[in-house]
Length: 293
Image (tube, rainbow, N blue to C red):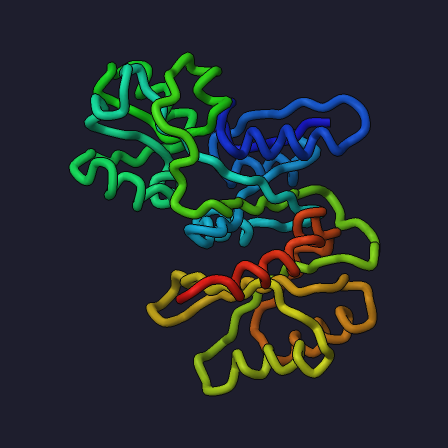
């Protein structure tokens, strides 16, 4: 089995792919691919068996480019999800953190550590690059004044020194990945369904009608996100995750009703929630109750 991920080796997508592969029986290969479209294309053309794509982070929100790429899903389906705890480190060739003047990393990683850099070195130059692994390669190449934000395992892989650990602003920092395959699994009783929908025109109550269809059936939404439709300013596409399977009665009925309300409906797939997702509700509510806003 071949599992495609956003490369190169050493990215958080690589770690998620390895974690997912551990849950599978039999041999597997993790295949580095250059972008999210190549991952979906690989599944569609059957050059890989699964693809793994990050879609949201608990600190920085949606991974916009990945979500936009899901529009290109045609024959393939979302068949699973996995959540990875993300702990960032500041890496470099320097002997101490104060020597770093510029730091590389993926936009998401740097945004997740913005408070750390503001408090420790507000004058440090922040440079976006394609991945955390590329950041390590650049820091290794350019000398001791350059650093990278990446994982602890990346430090070993690129022979860089760990100058600071757990520098993410949110101690509960996690990224959720979707698994793309050739078919969705059957009903397990603890499932989630992902859909994309759009409206033909902007009229009062459009989104309310969709939400009412779920609420009237007692279906819980676990996520709703909007992205620009890219045709005209003010037009949006909505990404919705809801609890339940598309082939259960309630899931089937709500999708039939949605087809009468929207101009476009794409069912990405139904799949079992991962173990973290099954257990998180109570602990997340406990943290929210203790938090102040």
